[in-house]
Amino acid sequence: MSPLHRALALAALPVLVLAGCTPGVGQPPAEIRTAADSVRDLDGVVAVEVTRSSPIESARGNFGQREQAAPSSVSVRVRLDETLRAGDAGAVTTEAQSLLAADADLLQSRDQVSLSVEYYAETEESDPKQSGYGEGPSLHVTTGAGPTTEVVGDAATDAYRLREAGAVSVTIGLGDGPGTWEDDPIAATAQVRAPSVDALPGLARTAVELDRSADLSASGGEFRSAARVPDVGAVALLVAAAERPDVSSATYLAQERRLIVRADTTSPAQDLTALRRWLDRQEYARASGYHVAYTVVDAEQTETTGWISGFEPPAQDPDTLPVPEGAAPWPVDPAAPDCTGDDLEVTFGVVDSSLGTRAAHVRARNVSGVPCAIENVPDLVFRNEAGQAQENVTITLGDVESARVVVPDGEYVVSAFLWRAMSTANDPDTTTTVEVTAVPGADPVRLDATVDGTRASGLDVLDGAEVRQSPWTQAGPPPEDPLTTG
Image 1 (cartoon, rainbow, N blue to C red):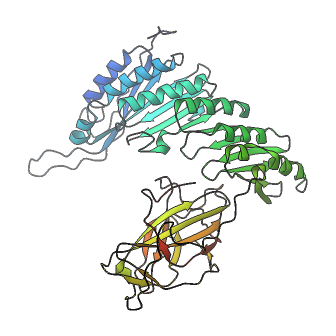
Image 2: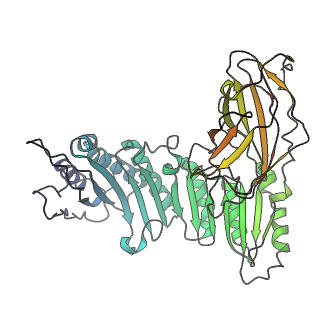
Image 3: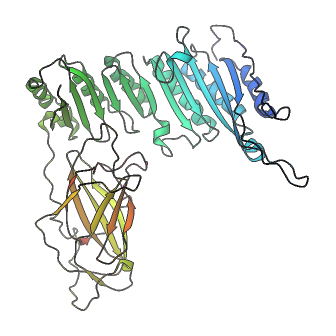
């Protein structure tokens, strides 16, 4: 490991004194204090600070029983030398985390004490009390005891690499979970602030090299990655838009593939023709093959929409659903009983979430053991995370009329629905569940409609949405992962 560029400073260990508590109750457990002393001695560690929160009042035992431990938490702040190389920072963080988290399970079970750790580095001119996360020249990796030491070390390495690439600040909050992208993509995402928008493409390239999802921001520009590795081409498009003289800010939403451009408030509201023509001429969409929508918000907050490169997706008709390729139509059986709610197992799947025109479907599988007939359009109710129905949603049917379909045992029918993309720029309550009444008289079934496995995402079927829907139609078996994104 490279030598330190300045002498290590030892931080005094603060001990909380709680009135009315027995001696030592307010102190961090001995295991943590011992581990903190060892961390202080590591090359690359500047200071270690340990505090314990005031525990909830303990439940006193009866008839001589031992007093029950009260829940509390211990916070450890480890200041790293900001001049460390990225690999050295990862190595010392890995070792520090292994020391601090070694007894985490014991402390939780024995003393009901949870552990949180923050690794940070700041330049001499920055003030941690003033800057906070994501502001001044700083780096923060926060974690509990859940992630492995390797995950924590990798996060510190990547944070230093991003700072070396020009980031003003980097924050990665791993939390108490495993901390990997597969387990928690939001926690694994780095929040990266750049000194200016023209630095964003370089930081995006670094994130790609690191295979690290990253949200990138600077004054006048923001790239929201949706917990994915950034698309360098999309970041370059964002920067080009943000640097136009008639633009005050630009935001790229990766999950929607949408660029939101806000005009300078001093520009005439009606004089945005040049900006829209510029967006229509950009080559990113055609070059990448992605359909990327744009929204221009003028000085009067009027929105105009279009497609980058003029590359608009083809219109889709969810009501022309042919029999699956290679499959024969199911037999017609006039004697087959009608399917009931108990006969059907209903599931949800996104089949196409390309911008501007979105399509999803619900499936119903016949689990009755015998063929049954279905002939209707299922009732759909779109609900937000609080369980409230989206208001003023209009559902219309296409040109295909309902037809009686006899569903063999174990086979599937599908009802597709289509809607136009709606803006989620101000974090509205997206649809996270779709309530389906498969056939008349059936009990409604609520299906998870989130995307990418996160509760923060969902369908942009919002208040006032217009939805087109098809009747139940013969379908093949679902793909292995019916919940996909376009």
